[in-house]
Image 1 (cartoon, rainbow, N blue to C red):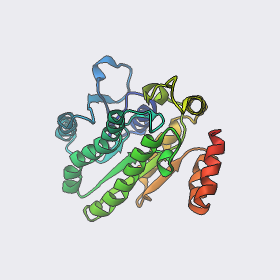
Image 2 (image 1 turned 90 degrees about the horizontal axis):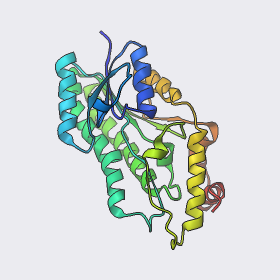
Image 3 (image 1 turned 180 degrees about the vertical axis):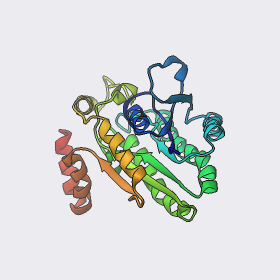
Image 4 (image 1 turned 120 degrees about the vertical axis):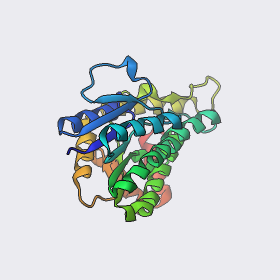
Length: 267
């Protein structure tokens, strides 16, 4: 029997690429979207799930288990971006990002874990970000939400190990997707003390996404992880310098590393 996979946030970008690739590899794949009725031309089944609404999470998971009798893999991919100076960004928008990127992902894990414990097997792959390993200027809240999910992954992996469940995260760098369009952008306020630096950083972020890697690289890595007998806890997928930046953060003095980041963002 093929493995049954649930991929959240599968209507576009990295999630769609992962779900499509796994379907081509013979897996039974359920992708999710908040409004799947408006979407067409998907090779996998697309079902309704909003990570901010627990009832839709439970309904989607119950549907899969009822139809397939099991759930082998969760790819926790649904998320949102946010940019802006901390001082200028509305706190409610910050909370919304944490509700999606952290608590939404946790609620999906909580929904699938009872079935995985019953099976005594399962793999949960949380999609985080290389940005979660460092505090990036004008992306503080996004970095913090993804960094928090990294730590939740570490802790949960220890809690469920006795049940035969593996919990892993994959941190992508910049990929050529429509994520920039889906971000909450704090406006560049005319009277903001950060106006020039923030606008320059926005332009740089958009350029990075436009010239990012093909999302198929993330799909291939997820496929590899599913097939590892003993996967690691942390994986990074990005260009050499993006991955190397994490190594540099470990070995360089804080101020030196900060200077490198500020030079990169032309601050």
